[in-house]
Image (tube, rainbow over all chains, first blue to last red; front, side, top):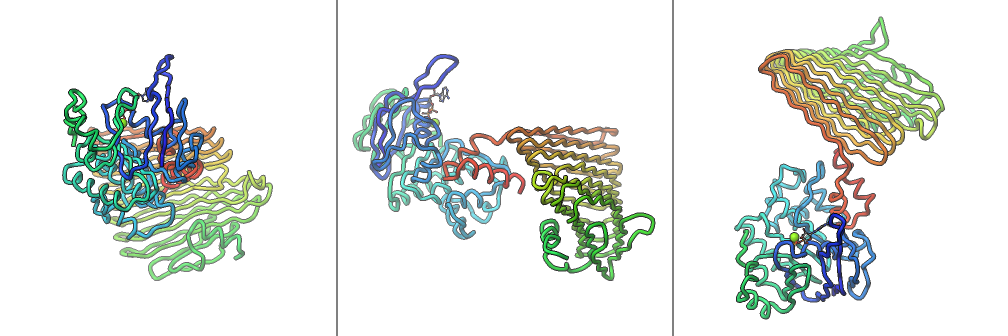
Length: 241
Length: 308
Ligand SMILES: Nc1ncnc2c1ncn2[C@@H]1O[C@H](COP(=O)(O)OP(=O)(O)O)[C@@H](O)[C@H]1O
Ligand SMILES: [Mg+2]
């Protein structure tokens, strides 16, 4: 179980304090949790706080009863936290195979690496030796990013808007990927998303807006509220796919 | 040949035993062993130190190994090697120099390699420079100053891969090329300096012939307090295409200077230069750390990949 206790995150914005995350407390125990909310609401920041990329100004992060607030990115990764970036990083010279191998944490065969790529709908043979450089499209990078998380197979997997930049055909497959992970995972998948179809397969939905936890509850509870509430349904009409 | 020499040979030429085909192994300033084939002859120069390598017209699929190894301290070795490649060939030449300097005196190797590539021939030239011991470990400097002179005849193609990853304290590498009609020269340089090393590279390519082309690409990593200078000049003297690119990662307190220069002497010359120097992007380190690597491990992976 992952627990956030009174998490706040303040940054220096041209000399003035800017509170991006405001006293957020929540528990994630379910297998599939969606985080949604308007752009600029603080979702990515919260994900980075979970992964250890940002250190919260105050509050505690508890993973399976252990306080991991002071742990580094590396230590958290080794404790079983994975994070798929909203904007994947490019690497000159490192290949898809290299990154999948690093993600798996051990030497893997080409066949194993290919299996992970096939899961995200990439024809593995065409990709395995490609460099993670500017020659790959945004959508391809996003899928490789997801394949890396699958290869890690950790207990907490955080995906930041995995659907962004992925075409419709792939999107259908993406839903299958998450459904399959949902069935196999021994932990929690946390997906930041604007997509109704992703929210629909979630056990729990968290709404973050203006840096605050606005709503948290079962899908059955939150989804209908979001559909009817005026303004809030922007989240669902915002179909960028 | 002793173990030190065998190890040097393995590092620069990837050979652990006597290679197949033509070869000439020079150790501590003298000929150690040589083999010639029906198509490839190797002859010791009579007027100066060095060799002439003659490759017959139409030779295809053959390799020539020309390694130089130095395991004595205080040795200054200077050689002139001329490669005469006939017409319609397709061959690979593997050169390289390894110094193992465990003493306190400077050891150096200055190799002057001249290539005469015949019409419509294809040449792959691989050279590796590698050192052990050296200034940091033993006090005596490892110095290498290779000069490469390239003459490409009509319709020929040459690919040069030059690598210096470890152990050379000081190097000044000069490469000069002249290209005739329809010839192509591709150069890939990989360079890493550490400690207090100094590396200077200078490429000059004259695109003299119509439809000649070149691509000079350098990737380098400068660590610690090392210092690198990269100079690349392409002169477009005809209808031609030239591209030069230098991409460097700078770390610690190192310094890198990149000076790309292109000069067009014809309205039909199309020339491009690119140069970028920067540290490892923070987000690259973070990404690999989220996969469980430490910062040092992440750095190593990024550097290895970059120089891959
Ligand atoms: N280092 C920073 N300095 C100043 N403002 C920041 C910084 N990082 C994020 N922000 C701001 O915090 C808010 C939340 O951003 P983000 O977490 O990316 O939102 P979301 O992912 O929900 O779209 C935005 O207004 C963003 O501009
Ligand atoms: Mg975001």
